[in-house]
Length: 61
Image (cartoon, rainbow, N blue to C red; front, side, top):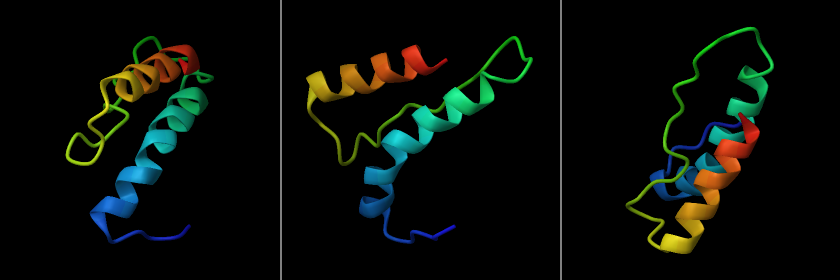
């Protein structure tokens, strides 16, 4: 894949990366998934957006 070295650019990608990874992993026969928080709090401050990202993560797993 494409390597992202800028933390701010990665923060944008991280949101969907965590959610997509959770969706892929929960398709496997495992009992517990420990997921990373789906946002970088240094760059994402909007509470409503953070709640929506958490809900999206919850739906994907």
